Image 1 (cartoon, rainbow, N blue to C red):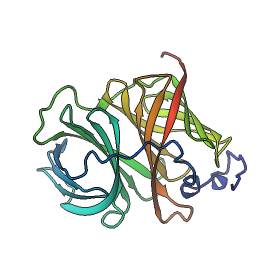
Image 2: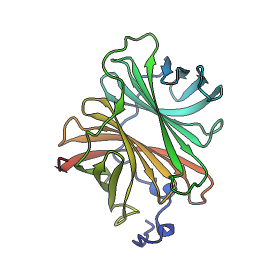
Image 3: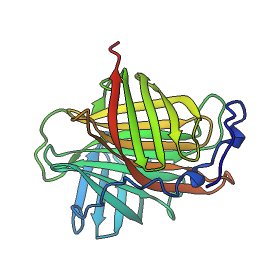
Length: 269
C-alpha cells in the first residue's frame, strides 16, 4: 500500500480521491434490486417533474423543469446502485458519466411516506472561499403514493456526536459533528492515516434516527453523501458515495462504499 507523509500544511501530499478507493468497500452493504423494473416519477421542490425508469443495472432519467426553474430539459441513462436502508426506504446512487459528467445524484426514495430527496453533487470551477464540489438538495413527492409525515428537512440531530466508522479491516475514520454546518474527520487507518480536517457539511433527517449527511472537502475536490442509520447507537450503518476529481484534477471519480459504526460519545450543546 502506498503511504503518505502526514503533512497538514501541504495538501498536495494528501492521497487523491482515486487512491482512496481500493479496499474501501469492505463493509459496503449488499446492493438491492427493490427498484428494478419500476418507473418512479416525482415532483421536486422547484415544481419540476423528474422521471426514473430502473432496470437491474441502469436507470433512464429525464428532468422537465417547472415554471420558474432555470434548469434545462435534460435526460440520460446511467449505471446505478441501490441500497435498502429501512423498510420502504431506498438509497440510489448514479453518476451522469456521459450527459452531465460533472454531476452525480444521490436519490433517496421513501415509499412508505411518498417522499423523495435528491442530493445533486456538482463539480465547478475553483472559486476562492468556496469548495469546488457543491451539493443541491431537492425534496419531492412521489406520484401515485400518499404523502405522509414531514418532508426531509435540515436537522441538528447529529450535533455533538462522536462516531467511529469502520469501512473495512484497513480503513476507519472518526467523525465529530461540531455544528450545523461543520464536522471534523480523523483518519485512524488507511491511506490517509493520521490526517484530519474540519469541513463543511449539511444534514437532513429522512426518518427519526436516519439522516442524509453531505460533506464537502476543502483541501481536495471531493464530496460525500452518506445515508446514516443512527437508530441503534451501538450498531450504526452507513451507505456512502464519493464524488470528485482524480489526482490529475481533470477526471471525475465516483464510487460507493459503506461502514459499520459505533457512537463513542455525545456532548450536548
